[in-house]
Length: 351
Image (cartoon, rainbow, N blue to C red; front, side, top):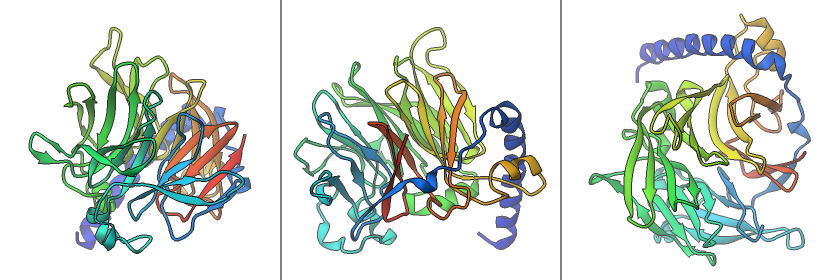
């Protein structure tokens, strides 16, 4: 991509962000002042590992479990041991995977992104960016591939998922049919809109497409009553709602417009949704927004939404020194567990 094309894309993106932020500011932000509290979060350092993009706890409450950049899933051994242990891998070709992060080897080593436990079976389901939808038993080990192709074409960028244990189906995203995970920046800048929301039925192993034409399809979360599923459309700074039940079944609408790039979405026990925003898009010409969100700094933000898309809480690190990037916010036992696709640690914030 040459410099002139990059400039035009960036300018177009900036103009789109301006309209999103103005609408968002008037409807949501002023009613919910952000709290600069994330610098108070505590660090859980990783050893020779980076990029804990997603976080999960098993049916016994043990964990967290995280997927890291070299293709491993790690499990925290608890407050007494205070260390991480290998739990599972998504590729059998581990001899080539010796560095904490090697993007050029991700297609060989695997790159686990979204993690979800099946609370009935104890199995861990894994959305691997290169190796598709996979599953591993409660004792870990080498995961088994479930979905790696659709209509005889390989999945290019499997990203996140959620499980409906009542219906025994999994909703997952294929971010792009053109760009792999290591090309994510090109996908964002190019305006690629080949992402999909898909459904996997466990009993029949059938895969269907629910939504197409998504701009960087990302995080997925099922509602508490299972009437709809949310999907983050990262490039368009919004979350879409696909109706599974009721008069709008099979239709979709915009759940919320956001002033930044949404990544993973995770529901808490009350049916509210935590959304990880990778950064706020701010412009000096919008003085109110600059004042609210730290004078134009790009910084990580955690946003809590109600079941109908209202903003309930906004937590951030204004200076971006502690949390410059977050990919998931997971509420568990009165704490927020915060992951990042690029950092060598988790952060934990007590609510």
